[in-house]
Image (cartoon, rainbow, N blue to C red; front, top):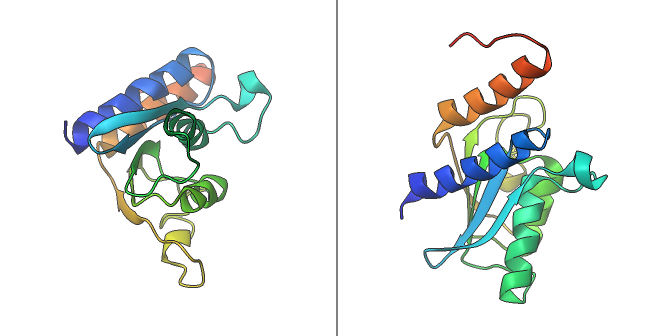
Amino acid sequence: MNDEDYMRAALEQARQAGACGEVPVGAVVVLDGEIVGRGFNQPIGRHDPTAHAEVMALRDAGARLGNYRLPGATLYVTLEPCAMCSGAIMHARLARVVFGARDPKTGVAGSVLDLFAETRLNHHARIEGGLLADECARLLSGFFAARRGRTLVA
């Protein structure tokens, strides 16, 4: 599998979130070429503000691997991480984060600010944004357009 295949797996997770009425964001954690964690947004259904896709995928990977630290792992997520998720990513010691769409309102991997470039923090994951960005953004736009009762024009 390659980066696009892993992002497509994250998109499938995002579709599950949307099917549950959650904002369609999905994530997978990959280690040594294997998906070891999957997650999608679930804060509404779980009544849990921390149940973002990234956190759910990290929890799944940690449980499967028996360790909260995931050195060498890559997180693929359909939307640029927020501050909370970025903190979790740093604590998990991920090597790399690949995201799809930018988030101009809460993204902290370069959009609002860049926590990963903050030299005073003790861990720095390599960040790559924009993979399948249009597809990731369309999924989000379509969700919010449907929620507002409008049809999205492509």
